[in-house]
Amino acid sequence: MAKLGRQKDIQRLNKVTHTVRSSQAILQYGVGAMVDFPDQTLMTAAPEYWGTRVSRIHDERLEKALKVDYFGMPGNSNFKDDWGIAYTRFPEWYFCPKCRVFQPLKSWIKEYAKKATAKQKEIDPNMKRPRCMECRQGLVPSRIVVACTKGHIDDFPWVRWAHEKNVTGRQDICPDPKITFETGTTATAGLEGLNIKCKSCNARATLKGAFDRDAMEKLGFRCTGRMPWKNHSVDCNEFPRAMQRGASSLYYPKVVSSLVIPPYSEKVNDWISSSKGFEKTLNYIGECDEFERQENIKKRLDKWSEEISIEISVDERVIKNILSRRLVESADNDSEIVNASGLQYRLEEFEALSGKISISNLNENDFVREEPDINFYDIPFVKNVSLIHKIREVRALTGFTRINPSDANEVGENIPGFIPLKEPETRWYPGYEVRGEGIFIEFNNADINQWFEQNEQSIQKRIKIINDHYQASYQGEFTSRVITPKFVLLHTIAHLLIRQLSFECGYTAASLRERLYCSEPEDGFEMSAILIYTASGDSEGTLGGLVRQGYWDCLPRTFKKAIEFGELCSNDPVCISSKGQGRDALNLASCHSCSLLPETSCEEFNVFLDRALVVGTFEEKEIGFYKDWI
Image (cartoon, rainbow, N blue to C red; front, side, top):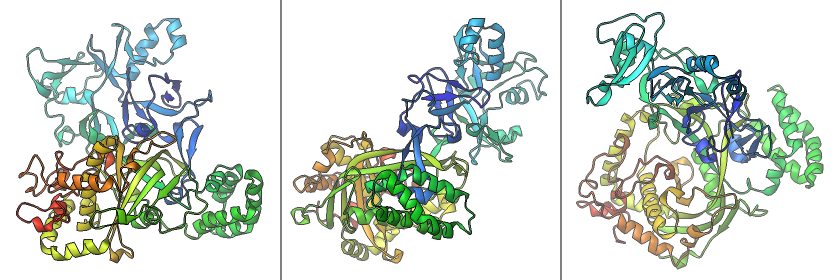
């Protein structure tokens, strides 16, 4: 399922040893990230280098928001010419653990070309598996790279570091440097025990200070602007930072997710999207002049509807209505940017999950909802419970950042240091879909407002601490987002409930995921709800264990246990009295012992949490939303 190399050096990799799961190709091993395979480390290349045969995934809402035609993931293994995901060789510096020679991969390949037998060259002309021909030993990739906040990445300047940090005095780089990587002969620990030596001129230096923030600035080494995943470089004047190859801060993927909901989940939409007639229509629209596009669509709508109707055997009037909504409205609003993480986008999901929109002609493979009688539930402040027996979520990788993470609510160009995943002319993003189940819980807005009004001063004091820390953080400098008490309350309840459900329903906490629906009256509509759903499942969905916990004979007991668990943390009184903990001190009374989750389960990456708003503190019990229930 893979290939590697540049355009002039493309070769197949073993599909057994060099394969990643679809979810990994979107999350930790997405485009621009490094993947440690058994024999080497590779970087996932841009989608333009991937195989042409990808499994197409459609979600009309997300396609319109991200302005693409589909989402794709290599998966057509039945085709012999399907090479799947492409990789490029990075980092390019490798050393032999036996002879300690340390040099770029191109030098190792030259050595291979000179010393390999004719049969070896015939089978493997470009040394697919890096190895030292002298020692017959597999090579080890460099563990240190340099990266800047604009997303560029390159190999550590080993030659320059060895010469300019020479312990015997500053020295110019020799004409023919030959670098070795050695450990100290004494029991020296840390970076001082790692030596870089040039055999040509005997210059040597330790790695002491290499990871200092200003190390490259002191060295006078500016960012090369290199983007290996695109095989491209740009001008960049920043000073990069040295980082370990496996550092989590080296790659922050920006994943946009969307629930496929009615009426967007109707089966006829899928048929239209995958038809040849619709693909032909999109190609025509893409070639139209921007000023004539809308008029041309209206003129040709009847013809397109007829052609697609004949192809998929669906009434022509139905086809025309859908095409009109998808194409004419899209042309009218071509300049409008839809935020897939915005409130309006969430409102559509909220209306479907709460039953506020019609679900006639529903495709049951995508969305099945049951609304039990709320009178059987004895959960304070809960207005409605919906059991989602089937739900489909589409996740797309749109880009990434390095060193500094992005805010969960920001998209695209609004994110500082954001690196787009694809070229503008590429009409798809890598993505995958998950089919699962979920429990949707809607809270009474009036009860939340009353709770806030009765304890406004104390609550605002705590929320101000979070907002102050947020504004002082890296993300807060580039956004006007304000964290509200209701958001922190709903977010913390969702975390407590997921932790408890993981004990009751048979799923681990990492297999469950939250989705928050929170807005204020000034936003034009008010939402106070959470969706807890399975974040992993096969093509047919899951087995109903989560939904079973949502019925009236289980959920009230589970809900109460979750709230009671949040009343006392094993780290109290330190945790409940905290004035800031977690990343950038964006949590108050919340730690790993009480309410934090695996980061893949949390929309906000484990920030904006405070148990005190749910259960109160030792000094101010009354600020707890559920103080009277425990």
